[in-house]
Image 1 (cartoon, one colour):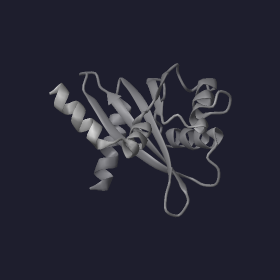
Image 2 (tube, rainbow, N blue to C red; image 1 turned 90 degrees about the vertical axis):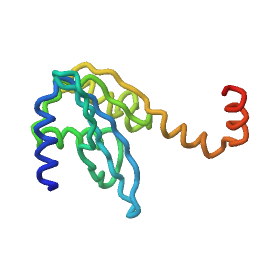
Image 3 (cartoon, rainbow, N blue to C red; image 1 turned 90 degrees about the horizontal axis):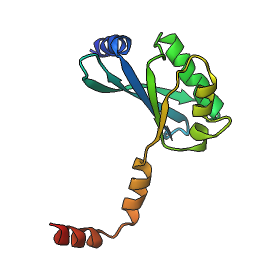
Image 4 (cartoon, rainbow, N blue to C red; image 1 turned 30 degrees about the vertical axis):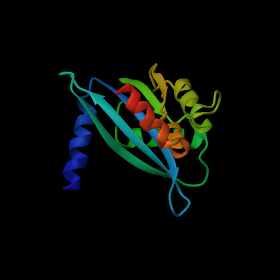
Length: 146
């Protein structure tokens, strides 16, 4: 079954009309950084599909250069064209957003990447806020708003 899923995803990655990428880097229990790559594809009938494309272990350092070379190697090895990339979303970490050597800056300097928009995902900040938010305030607001 997993071969069929991979085959379908590769087929989808060849037939989209536009796509965007989302990246999230975290460290696993063995202290190895893992880079998760998600894709949102838009097809010619205007349907959208989101998939987890790959989890790449980042051995050693997690600088922008390391992330860039790992991502570029993956896209080259899978023959995934980047010409229709329209956006990249990250968590805002310096390795991704550094002005000179961040992943996004390196993508913009590379001729294989087209012009694309960048976005900052706020899920991490929302999770941190949720830890410190007093739930009584939420219920009070809900009573007055409802």
